[in-house]
Length: 265
Image (cartoon, rainbow, N blue to C red; front, side):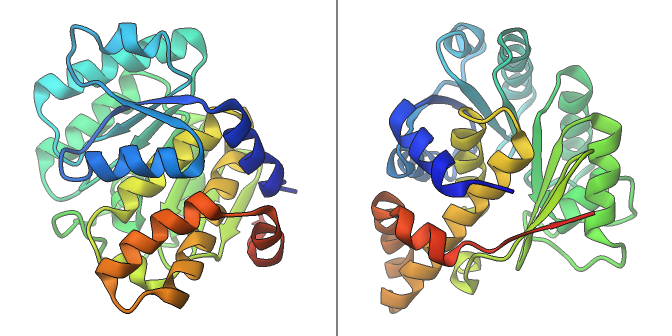
């Protein structure tokens, strides 16, 4: 059973420092979403300091949305430090399947370090599982394979947690899997909500070593905030602003009432 309320309270009490080497398109919003949920962000990309910065952080979020070879080197260096210190590493495999370079670099990261939480949309995760799919830029495309089975396949092989975001989010681990049914369609109407979700995953993983539980709780809280924001917003721009406010004001009563997390094999 996932104690989402307790984990949210722990994030806010401990205020973990979440180190990001992330997407230039969404870096500002990622920093803000970490603050809104109750943690602290730091964005350090230079290879000359990425390992040192990880030494004072509590978690690492890697996002390959705007990757370069030099950036990947910095990611691997920081992740090796995180592995050494047993800090959770979250990898958002943005755009995997769109180009050969992007796919190859994502696999390079996965093979070089222990990624504790691997996140992507259904086509990104399917590609990493070996399916013959492509990604349209950074947007998911329809796939024939069962995405939960593909996620479980990677989780078993990599001994980690695999998160697949979509209408319903899948959290797969070698031991336990969850379906998170919180969220709203407006999350797909502006750029970067997947990046925001990855940052929230980092916040929860920083305080809970059971990364499957941490991921399910993080996605549920993010989805609940989206549902609440949609009740007040008149369009995508207003929704985005309201989403930050709802994350900041998210209380235990709303989480207890609204969370939709189902376990499955």
